[in-house]
Amino acid sequence: MNTEIVDFRERNNRSVAPTGHLRIMETTDLHMQILDYDYFADHPDKTTGLIRLANKIAALRADPDVTTLLMDNGDFLQGNPLADYIAANWERGRLHPMIAAMNVMGYDALGLGNHEFDYGIDFLRSALDGTEFPATCANLRLTDGQELVPPYAILQRNISCDDGMTRAIKIGVVGFLPPQVSDWNPDKLSGIAETTDIAACAKQIIPTMKAEGADIIIALCHSGIGANDHFEGMENAAVPLASINEIDVILAGHTHEFFPDPDRSVSDIVDPVSGTLHGKPTVMPGFYGSRLGVVDLKLRWVDDTWQIRSHRTRLAKGDPGLAPESALPQRLKQEVFAAHVATLAHIRQPIATTNDHVHSYFTTIGPDLSQRLLAQAQRAHVKEVLAGTEHERLPVLAATAPYLFGGRAGPGHYIDIPPGPIALRDAAAMFPFTDKLCAVRRTGAELRNWIERGASHYMQVTVGAHDQPLINPFSPGYNCDVIHGLTYEIDLSQPARFDTAGALISSQNSRLRDLRYDGKPVLDDDLFVVAANRYRINGGGGYVRCPDEDLLYLSTLSVRDVLIQSFKGQSNIESLPAKEWEFTHHPNTSGVFPSAPAAQDHLAEPISYVGHGENGFDLYRFTF
Image (cartoon, rainbow, N blue to C red; front, side):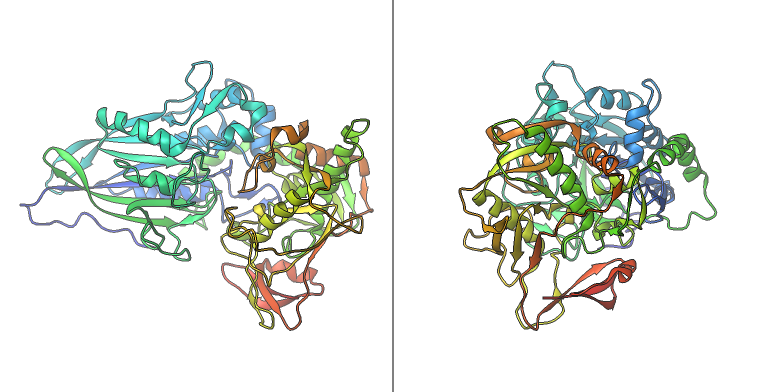
């Protein structure tokens, strides 16, 4: 990964074409993380927040010989309790705090992400009214013919060249989001908006942008780096998008990953060391403001047109100190201070108490109490609404996945609720999104594939070997589903049936063992009801989309509201849900995985402490 800014101001022979320097900076998936504060854990977090990038952005803009652009690639409006509080209490007509912060930072453009629509079109439109820069989205349109935002923007800028001249440049910026957004938000977008395939849309619109004079084109691709080959409706389509002629730079997002990333495999198409897709500069700077994506272009003026002579990509970390605090971070604090204080007062409200310590330090290594509590709430709600219907006799299960699991967010991002009060913020930590709760009919065979997809989270282990890597580093915890209400084993000595994107590797591969309901083996044609969030049942995360005819119930409440109701109904959490699954035992075999140093306080067989790991994590051992 490149760690130094290339100096493109070096003077060359004056007989060659003059050159200039354009620097493009990207934030993505901020999820309303303006401040360096963890609203789920209710304490400061110096590793996150737009505020931590403010001084870095200012420094990268400081060179008068470099033309700079700052862009956001979507999912900026939703994702933490601050966002939810603002959405519930914001007075229309006032400047939204995130838009105010972006105005302060001097953004040049933004693209929309899928989570921008979680509070509805009207809320999004009102928030965007305050922008002092263009917003774009090409592959979503409103069915009433009105324009939510333009599909693209042409930015007029000037480039200082090494011959002493300043020349104009037209920079085309076009936004794309996952076409599945209409499936993930049907209550907000059904009949209101339509989406199209990312690559197909780009092929139609890029020629128009070139015809309007765009010298270079930047794709704000709120989509991850997925398969190389295009297929209709790809969720993570950055690679096929990069193959399209006339697109010069890819700013990726959505999957919360880092790119460049030397830990990825190198291919002719994807070069994670130099940071290119199909040879084109590409960055993806994680989420929550943990990094800033930087693309430096050396431009050459030839025959009255601009050409890209060379490029360099990198990810930059923010300022961990902010001491003494500069004027820019202070201005950001001012824009969000009132909403921040009000949010803290709201999320600290107690809703129940627990006699057990609830944490997620080992969330995908064994049955997790925080997920079991969420599943208990989902199952109870669905059982209640299906009572008296033709489906009431079907067994009700629940699908959950963790959302605070460490990973790229760092060792501070786990659930940790000591015995005592459970607050609203704790419910938000267990399910931070606005997805509605659904009930779907599934067969035993379909459940097997569901569990096998979640089991791709793990590496294959060799029986008899010790301290092998246990978790696939390219599998986020939020895609590791557990099906509650069944008992089963996951045999990691076997190869995975699916890859970490959900693509089938081989139907002959199987890690699932001894799948049972109420002590009896589950047969392929057995019928069940599964309580799950709308994102998952509509295929989010590489899972199979459940057909509409199998949708038995769609709640008017979000999953989190269902959980809050469950907590308030119990008051004191004493009767805990049963454990469901475990890894298959293998003698003389162990694997290692990272978790927070604080996890040492919660060790129990078969988990033991190993030592210090990387990036602030410690290493732990699981003995099979």
